Image (cartoon, rainbow, N blue to C red; front, side, top):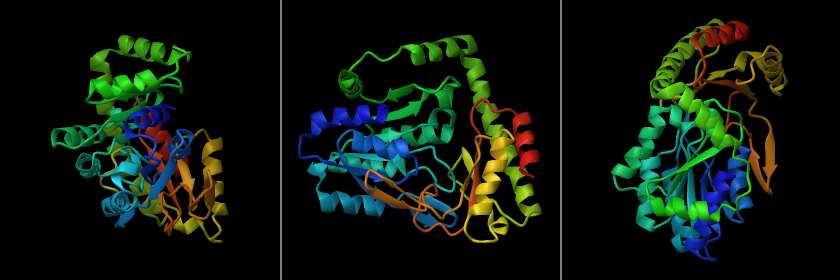
Length: 313
């Protein structure tokens, strides 16, 4: 809803002719639905593949701007934090396009506060003269509070002020209270320590998952720009080729208390608001191998990593 609120505020400054939102594909329903909920037409930009990693197609974004016309575009939406093998969007380059064509730039920074790399992308974009109107992050993903809140940030107070004026009010104050109590009780030093622990645990998980992958004839996909999530192929267990055994693995992990990891078969498709996404969940129409993703979030302990690896193995 926070993304929708931002998009609605852009409507007032872009005018009624701006009907489109250019969106670099990420297979998360809420991101895509925020566009149609705000009353805009999504223009989906498929990602390009470099090795194993999926990256931003800056060329396609620029082509779409030229084809549609800058004045007809309400915003360009990009993403920092995401599930591997997708990497974060090339925020600095897209920000320069937005500055060049005078188009609002909205960044989905859902998990980003806990990742110094994600925050650096946003900071770099601003320092190098690019345009970022707002970036949105989830409170539950970054501050270990219940689901239901978001933080809308930006570099221009007037932009954030316009977004706040769009907010209709009457929502619960509980998410704000949860974040306030959590941060006050935790303190800055403890929060910074949790960020460091998360980084260390990411390195640990990647090492241990690599060992498991090698043991079972699989491999970790190379996604060097993704500092939150990693992916391990599941080629050897997909004997039938229909993805059922892959889905079965996901079910077995879930009933064993592993709720964060997810499996992607690369077989199914999904229709959202009359737009069909092939191989939904993989961020791409051209996924060739099933895989399992695992992420390291703030609050995760070293013991959590070892428990996950034991159950996965």
